[in-house]
Length: 241
Image (cartoon, rainbow, N blue to C red):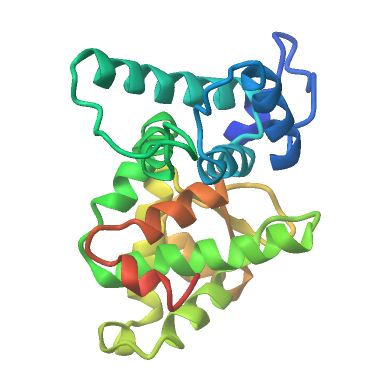
């Protein structure tokens, strides 16, 4: 049986499914990009743009291939704008490519179905629930915990503590339905604490109650970014994340 692995790990498996190298951190990616661009006299990326590129890549995959893919895409976009005579005039002493251009490229390169799902959420209760899961998962990552699973009850408690009128009447049953929707789109995994058999319906969530644990199946930072840049509810994420 093939076990599910996150994108960050999967990108480092060879054909025998063995892990072939560890992920790069932001500082290491910065050294790589500097070594590739250091010989160019003209400053291509601003300092802020390089920092965003390296640390966002490290947060999503830590993969140098993704780093170079993003850098190449940004440079290609720059060249096209120059050829089309649409490159804006200005003072580019700090770099031709700014944070704005890099952010656009990063969102495109790391775009996935689950990101689109978060972006198209138009129900505030669903949105703050995603934020609550991301918040709890990011805390687990920071603690470097061996088990990334969270108590589903703790997520429900966080959502209810937000003091928003939209969640005041939220019952545990309705919350379970929302969580099951997230399971169906591949955003989260649900199982019973101490076991690794995934739960497959909202009925299971009700049956096992406070024994249910949840984990994100997607990179935490990607979900956090999707919430922060949500066009309608992005400001609510500041109260949670």
